Length: 233
Image 1 (spheres, rainbow, N blue to C red):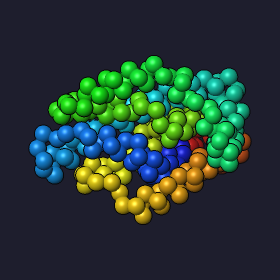
Image 2 (image 1 turned 30 degrees about the horizontal axis):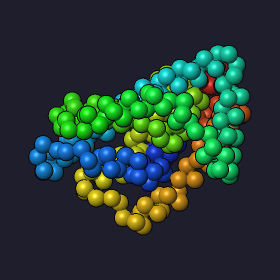
Image 3 (image 1 turned 120 degrees about the vertical axis):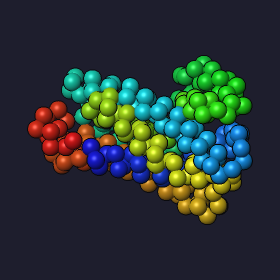
Image 4 (image 1 turned 45 degrees about the horizontal axis):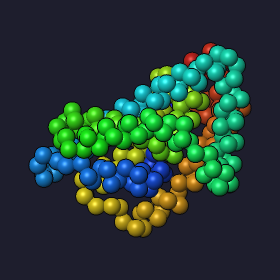
């Protein structure tokens, strides 16, 4: 479990360039009550905490689904399949672009965006927290990848932790962005953009390794084996 949480954290860090492009303008558009560092820090923490709570709730749902797959004896197959699909998507991006995931959740996303637009003027702590929660519902390829990782976990708690750690990995970029009030430098953004495929390759490989159940603690435990589960908290 420790290794998977580390990979979730790394996934968030390597996906930071994507996060800056998707969530950066929103983070900068939300006002603060007082233009001081303390006020900006408090609003930033409230905003990003709400986003991570949403990620954790999504992860809990997908982790519970993954637990059901494990009980049905299907989690290993699903984990390997996800890993192969992620790596194929990295090698053949045109195929991925044709799979318009957003069309399946279009109505829900439109409602979330509409509600989010109304929330942008609220700068109270609870308002910012709720805005962050809505932000976590917006469509994002990196979030989809993290949700797929939650499926490979052993239950709702592990799934929630996986996506929470993914969210924490995005904090340095998004928190730094809002505190500084400007985008990351072009060199940093270019570096993070080049590292994004590494995140996809890493996650794909981890899914395959986990699905193979090689008996390697934390990395590739034997799924469904109580002894291994006890040894790998």
